[in-house]
Structure formats: structure tokens, C-alpha cells
Amino acid sequence: MRRLLPLFWVVLMSPLLGGQSWTEDQGEMGGEVDLLALGLDVEEQVGAPINAPLSGPALEARTEQISGVLRCPVCQGLSVADSPSESARNMKRQIRAMVAAGYTEAQITEYFVGAYGDFVLMSPEKRGFNLFVWLAPVGVLLVGGGLGLATIRKSALQRAPDASESTGQADEPSGLDPWIEKIRSEAAED
Amino acid sequence: MNNRPSWLILGPGLLLVIAGIAFLAKGLYLNPHEIRSPLLEQQAPAFELPSLADGKSVRASDLVGTPTVVNFWATWCESCPREHPLLVDLARRYAGRVQFVGIAYNDKNDRIQSWLERHGGATYPTLVDINGKAAIAYGVYGVPETYVIDAAGVIRHKHTGMINPQELAVQLEGLL
Figure: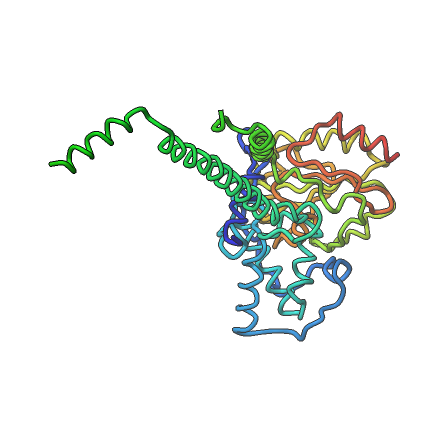
């Protein structure tokens, strides 16, 4: 179900981009930059880093994991980890810089949500209106299942009286009984 | 008679299905990039970027005190050549009352310089967002995007796509 949620969001929120007056993503980095430099806004948005600084394979693994839970804002349903776009690469550099400085996953997602809104999360948080996304499928299953069961029970109840009616009809005199009795008695005489 | 559908059950069910389809259909026409920015009515994020003209660092805090229009753009942006003269014109009209700042996103200095020369120069400073950190801080989805920031440094308006000069002028008049 978690895998289907991004698809749901794409269907729900996918833009009709034809005729847009702006460009989503191109360009390239302008030159030599400090890849682990943090923006000035980071600490004022989410405070000081909580964890110890990371480096090496642990830094790359944590960067990849957090990139997987954040949406590339210019793509159709791709995470930052999966997108080759320049925007996603910029975001991944920012994630790596924050992880390297010791920011937690919660702090990093809070930072991106603060700039882009909940849309930047691949799975919307289970709060507020977002709960609808999580609960609606369960609700539809429950209501649909309940209606299905009620319909099956109702038709079963309707069939039961029909069956007794047909039995009753068999017990009723059909007018053939005297003839059947006559055939039986003749057979016995033979 | 007994097989006739129960409208007491089917009616609400059908209504639910129709409401669900309408909800999803509406979603198809929504543009996620036009979602209200969480930064509106918030203090503009801090940044420190080199100026194209002399390479000196400019901080967001340097802009506080005067209403500011921050325009994210790029030389590879399709509508920026059409938007640029509109911004230049507005910057002239509001000179001394509103400061305009261009932030070139994911671009190179030489390309920015030659683009500006080809498009009539600039009447306002251009900063270079080399690695997109300022764009991320402002939640930029694409270019051009324009932010109107009041004298206290609070973001009052965000416009996605090419600006509408009349609409932007109304926003600016509201700050003066």
C-alpha cells in the first residue's frame, strides 16, 4: 500500500503542464562549490543538528535513504533518490550536507516540508486531511465488504422461503394421487 | 419483486462513487507547483550569494528595510526573455521605493552575463545561486518564480511563472 501511495498522489495532483509559462528543470551547477556547505537558513529553520556528524559509507547510505522519502518537486512521482534531474541533484547535495553535519531525518524532512510543503514527502504524514488518504481505502473496503455481505445474506434469506414454498407445493394434492395409487395397486396385483 | 435493488443501499453507494470520481477528476487538474507556499507570511529564508557584478556576497538580511522583489530565473528558462523587460520596467517605475533582485538559478556566470547583454542589461543586481541552495530554501519548483518581500523581510506573495506586471504592481502598492 505504501508503494501505491505515490501513484495516488500523482493521479490526484498531477498537473496539466501544457502551456506553462515557466521551465521546470535544466541548467547545471555554475562552478566549484563546497558540496557539504549548508545554507544560512538551515539552522534558523530546524535548529542545531541533533546527531553526530557522519562521513564515508554511513553518510552515503543515510543520504540515499532520506533521498528516498523526499519527492523530486519537478518530477512525476519520482523520489529525489530516483530522479536524474538537476533539482533532485541539488536537493540530494543539500540532504548529504545536512546528514554530514549531524541533522536527523526528522530535521531534514522538516526543512524540506518548510520550503515545499507536505507535497515534498513521498508518503503524506498521517495527520489532518492527509488521514483521508490513509483511511479512505480502508473505509471503502469496510463499507463495500459490509454492503456485499448484507446483499449476500439478504438474497440467501430470500431463497430460503422460496425453497420451503416449493416443498409445500410438493406436499399439496396435485390431482394425480388417485392415479398414482391405482398404478401402485395394479403393480402389486401383478 | 424481492430482486429489485434496494435504493436505500445503492443510492448512498452511487453518491459515494460519484463523489470519489469527482474528487479524483478535480485532482487531475491541480498543479502541485501552485500549492500555497508554506513560506507565505513567514520570514524570508536567509541566504548568502555572490553578486554577478563583483562577486561580493549579498545576504538576505542586507535586503531588509525596503520592500523587495526576488526573481528566480535562468538563461535556459523559456519565458525569462519575455519576463525580463517587464521586470526591468517595474524596477524603473518603483526605483527608490522597491528593490529588485534577480537570482540566477543553476547557471554559469559567463552565460548569465552574455544573456543579460543580449536582453538589454539589468537595472537591478543579479545574484548567482551556484548550487541551488537559495532555490531550495525558497521552495522553488521551476523558473521563473517571483517573491514579494515586505520591508520587515516577510514573504507576502509568491508568483509561479511569468509575472503579470499589473498584478505585481498591485502587490507592491500594498506594501508602500
